[in-house]
Image: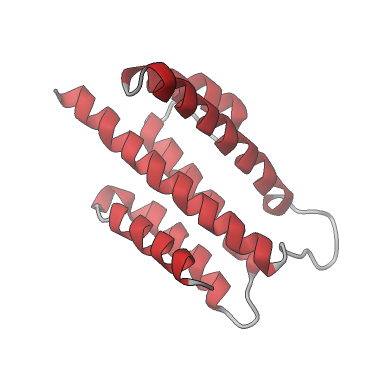
Length: 154
């Protein structure tokens, strides 16, 4: 891996430093541990990253959504953006959530049993990209969650 990959990982770990994120942190740690195995278990790595994001998504929505998918992002999370952003920032945030929806769709390739004897994970370069982008989405969602909680209590 490279320095940027390591820095991205460390920034996300720092953002996960609250007890309420223990479940998220566990999946996040599993994702990176799977890449550290020799050979790397890329399938487990990307599945665990998805689980980290889904776990946080469910925490954010306090039982409103039972899964993470495009429909749930559009229905529950996009409307919350209007309390956090406006103008171009709001437009951009909604597009970034659309990008997250596509990331989630991409993970379905590795989350569900493919019906083969020996399911494989993505190649290492793709797994690194998935974990890097997943870490960025996770960190942003953590910041959104914190802002929403702050707005609730102000």
